[in-house]
Each structure stands twice: as structure tokens, then as C-alpha cells.
Length: 499
Ligand SMILES: Cc1cc2nc3c(=O)[nH]c(=O)nc-3n(C[C@H](O)[C@H](O)[C@H](O)COP(=O)(O)O)c2cc1C
Ligand SMILES: [Mn+2]
Image (cartoon, rainbow, N blue to C red):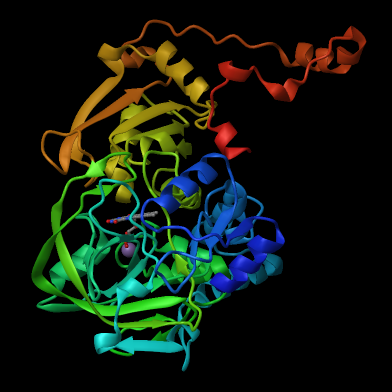
């Protein structure tokens, strides 16, 4: 697997595969692009390169992640589960037995060793260096996405900071509201690592924002890694080659050498402004809230830099596939801690943090409750509002099956857990921001030790008869297309996942 090395390589591949359309007609970054992209995303259409954005000197790339096919192309993998399998291979490494396994083990160790970012002398991201009065965010085609947004927002940034105590790097995707030529707000929410670095800083925290990266590095900025793990390591591992870095021009931070654009700058401890409202991925406007001011000290870029953007809003939007990539890639890590988990699904319509459907190999009374609480204690999954637990044989991606078992197996008085805990920063439903109720629904089959009467057997045909009918099907002369399913009756994320 050789994933794209930078944004240019990625665009070339998309174009070769007929997955990108260049739009030369002049378009407005103020709302118009959102409406175009919304239609294209919802119809499973191509990535778009807007070459002529009103008032801007740079083209805008959008919808690069908008389909499962493109998300797989980004990883140069046949499926997102294949990417997850590579992660699992490393997480589940056992002491090797025999020469073959030893060699395989060494290859895997090498792939980890090669993940570490590498510093280089020069980078294309610094072909042009603008400092002082030349810094002007107006050069970039920053989108105002929704009618209630007060200003344009940078929506696909990789924000780089360092932990002031340990020096560990963090990369997070946090939007930036444009304030003027040289300042933005920095929307790192309270549970995020960039925010933690900022709170640990005594006064000033240096910040670099990379725009226009290879798709894996861009994805990695959105990956919910534990704070002490550098997202660029994950990017290097998934790419199979290290992310290359150069020293910033006005800050003592290393920045991606291959980025299209880098914003260098700093944030002062108590320098806040009122960010928002913003038409958010929850489908609602997040109300204005104080966030730090980001002062841009330099814009560095390629000579003909391409600006990347994304629109979030009422799901589904382009970010659905970034979320699905995380769901798949992090499954091996989730299983490491909670091995009875078979699979999970975070529905796009649940904006990822509202609902988690999880299937388990149930082994003892109360097991479903154990897993609910495990999820409520696991990394960013801890913000999940509702957890539905089903038995191992249920396909968590088939929402009709899940609804069937929730309906059939649940006594609401006995099988619903109402708990309390931290909630997503953007969740507007709880009475207080950040904390509120959680719901767990145990839709597994219950045993007598869980207070249930004898559980009836589920209906299923015998293997013998199914095989017999398979063998004889042609004889009957009945024409059906078994892959067609039953239209409206089968409502499933399979349609979305096309697996
Ligand atoms: C398109 C997109 C936009 C996002 N915008 C924000 C944002 O503005 N603020 C935020 O805190 N998280 C945002 N996120 C989620 C974070 O990027 C994600 O939680 C990531 O894990 C943060 O990195 P961290 O774990 O190092 O803090 C966004 C994710 C995506 C895919
Ligand atoms: Mn992080």
C-alpha cells in the first residue's frame, strides 16, 4: 500500500479515477460553495476543485473524503476494515514463534519505528513566506458555511501544539473563525488535547496550523488518540512513511514540509473572544462561547497553494466518512480493552457521539451493563449519550436488526440504565452544558439470573433445508434477485457502508 504522499499526489489520483471535478466557473465562498457541496455530497458525487473563488487567489478543494470509495483511496486500502487490520496486527503482537513469525514481527516493529516524523531542511510549504504586514488571511478562499455564521471559518485545519511539560506534540482538527487579516479564534473544545496544552502553558503557547495535507495526515488530526501519543506517528504508520517536518519561520515548532499552507502564530493564556455561532456537525448552530484568540505571525505556502475545506452541518455531510474511518480504525484498540466486544457502530445520524450500538459475546449476568460503563469510560467514546448493547450474532450496522432486538428483547423497566456523565461540548440537550444523562439499553437475550422468565428460542431454518433449497433453487423456476433485499423494509447503514 502506498497512500498519497501529499495533496498534489492525492488530487492527481482522484482525477485519474474520475473522482474529481474542476470547477472553473466563478463561485462565492460565502454560502454558495456550501449549497453546491451539500448537493454533491448527498448524491455521492466527486471531490470538487473550485479554481476561481471570488476575491481569492487560491483554489479550494472540497469533498475529498465524501464517499467510502475515496476514503479507501486515501488509505490506498481495499476497505476501512483492512486499515483496522493493520492496526490490530501491531496491537496484538505476540512473542513470535519460529522464523517466519519472527521475520513478520520484525517487519511490524520496523513499520512502527518508521512512523516517527522526520525533520528535513526544506519544505514546499515554505516556498512563499509572508510575515508582518504581509500576513493576510483574506488571500485564502475561507468559506462562510451557513447563513447564521458571523464570519468565514477555516474548517479542515491540522492544529499543532506541544505539551509544555513533556514536549509531546499534538495535532487536532479545531476550526478557526476568521476575525481579521491576522487573527482567528481557536475552537478547541474542553475535552481536547490542544486545549489541555493551552491550559498548561504559562503565558504564550506557540501554534502551527497546517492546511492542505496528504489525506492520511489530515485524517489523523481528527483521530481521538490518547493525549501522550503524537497524531503524526499514527499518520506515519498508516502512510507507511514518516511525515516530514521543517522548522517554522517565526515559531520554534516543526511544521509539515509538504503542506500547501501553514499558519504560524501563538495564543496568549487569557486572550479570549466570542467565537460563533457556527452551523455545526450536530445539525444546529452552536451558540457563541469564549475561545482563545490565535495571532498569526506568518503564512507560509506553496507558490500556487490549494486551500482545503469541508462543510459540516445536519448529517450526513462529508465528515461522515472521517468519522467512519475512526470507528473502523479504532475498533482494534477498543477490543484490546473490552475484548468481549465483537463490533460497534456509531450512526452518522447520531453525529457520532449520540448513539453507539455495540455487540458483545455475553458471558455472565449483567454483562451488557459492564460494557455500557466501559464505553462511558473509554477515551472520547466516554462522551457517548446512548449505548445499545446486542448479542454477538446481531449485525450492529443493520439498524433494522438492531431495532428488532431493542423491540423484542427489552423490558424497559429492567433493561434500561439511566446514568450520568460528561457529554459532548456541542450537545445542546442537557440542562447544563458538558454533563448530563446517559442511557443504556440492554437488548441482549436475558437469563434467569437477570430476572427474566425462560427466554424463547429464536426462529431459524435448519442448515440442511437451507442447503437443500439452495441446491434446488433453479428447479423451482422462481425468479428473484436475492441481493435486492426488500426496498423500504430493509433500512440499514449497509446502504451507506456498501459492504
Ligand atoms: C471536520 C471536523 C471538524 C472538527 N472541528 C472541531 C472543532 O472545531 N473543535 C474541536 O474541539 N473538535 C473538532 N473536531 C473533532 C476533533 O478534531 C477530534 O476530536 C480530535 O480527536 C481532536 O484531537 P485531539 O484528540 O488531539 O484533541 C472536528 C473534527 C472534524 C472531522
Ligand atoms: Mn491528541
